[in-house]
Image 1 (cartoon, rainbow, N blue to C red):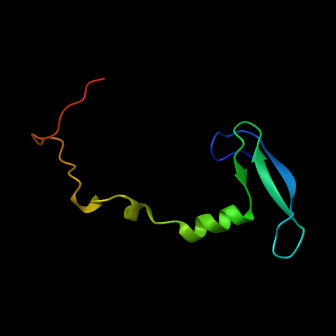
Image 2: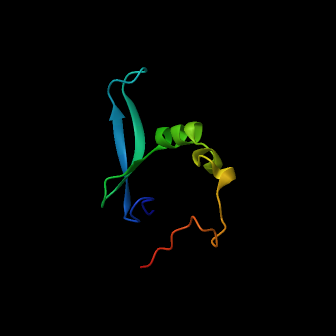
Image 3: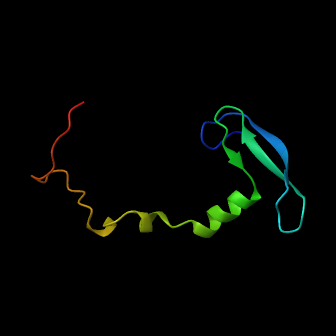
Length: 78
């Protein structure tokens, strides 16, 4: 399995939650060896709950001017 951040190696870890509501509770998580990114069922669930469509994240997406010949567009040279 590859990391979604850096494409590094993800290893499975078994974790224990000592302060859970039901007492001790084991969970399985994956951790990237390179960057330390963690991924588990709780993180995935929260991402799905709070995910917004990309169009909502772009303010003013209806008024975006795609006319490259307009005078107010400054040409950038690399």
